[in-house]
Length: 375
Image 1 (tube, rainbow, N blue to C red):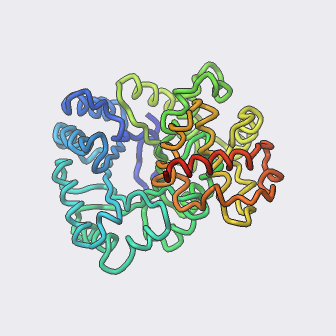
Image 2: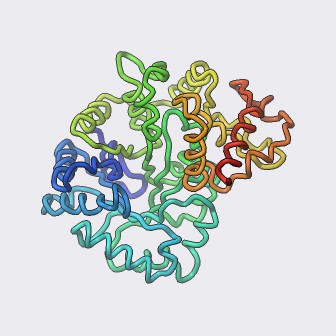
């Protein structure tokens, strides 16, 4: 296993982390706990979970594994999370921490995330007097948690804003080889601030392994597109831990093998990948961001085009696109976004688009799906 330094904290952490939201729920908790132990034996020392993952079984599964680790517990970094809307008082925040500690069979959590920040208003809610952050600070003072971090789905520039007050000691965000240009501002802001950066969804929520033929251009030297996507996140110096949702030992073996072979990416390598995406994605949005900030009505064009990629890659029908749209509006890159139906067809985004995409036409499709979602 390859290891990296977790920002200013200096921890020696595995480049691959165990993301506890993809357990095979047809298996028993004991079988899934054995998978965690296998990962630890392979050198993975970063374990991530949260309430409600995997039919609300994830913390229990990790807890069973932690109990079996015994004295080896101190060799791993264990994290869980709490949402500001559910932990809207200091007392509720503490109760959530205590519940996670009990389920995870541990006296302390190495990291605890202010979870799933989708709008800056949610961050502000967590930080208000008597709110979640205050409760977490008390837990930290008592040794129940060691570090407070933030998990966010904000766009890159908003992540930069989120981190300006130096309130967090790590950041968890969604970044992968397909969307990294859209997220890179946030990654670099955290890295330059000396924070450990944990990448979730390195395989684009399964899009990459499910579409390997269409994404074959990502691969080099006999690797698969899935391996290339893992290599990208693992190799980026700005990314500390790449969280992977494992369901089998083979998945763990693959990620560990990629980590052991991966060499650090340079800025020149990253620029080459940027160019490679632009040349090969053709009708897909690469998330380069050149269209951002140009819309007179504030539509986040790149976000909508990244969402539209699902139709082109996977061939989703209207019903499936409506369902995905609802998820993106609630949890993803379209939280708080103005409606696509507000497009005035000025054409500024299309002129700036490096892919020469038919953005206006796509926004009309999306506006239609928005109407179907509302009906």
